[in-house]
Image 1: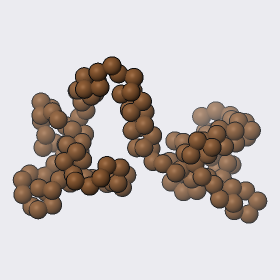
Image 2 (image 1 turned 120 degrees about the vertical axis):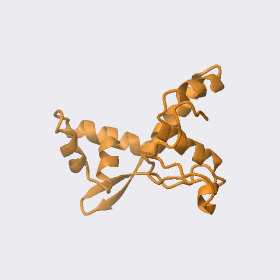
Image 3 (image 1 turned 90 degrees about the vertical axis):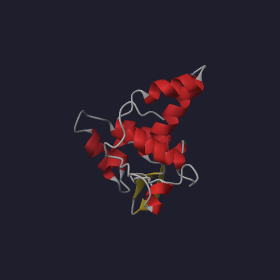
Length: 143
């Protein structure tokens, strides 16, 4: 999936394989098996182009990470404690981004990946502005 996300465009098995083989040799049959399994699970779709298929991600890397975090929370006997411990690992910029996302009335999961979510105060010109890359939130300022 990392190769498909990094490429950012529909890719053939050979294109994916070329990038995978930078690190080590990968058999074509292994690559196509994994790609087809990812397609069966809904992570990739494909369209025919000439005699081959081009594959593209149906979900973002952020969706994948969120899914893993959700699975980890499902395993926790105390979700609140797990969330608090997780928040201890966040940078000030990540805390600010999470805070503005939680305060945003827009339904969850509707933000474009890679965009900075701004709060309603920012949209109206009130209050200070927290950027996803900013330092306006101190380390001790938690959710």
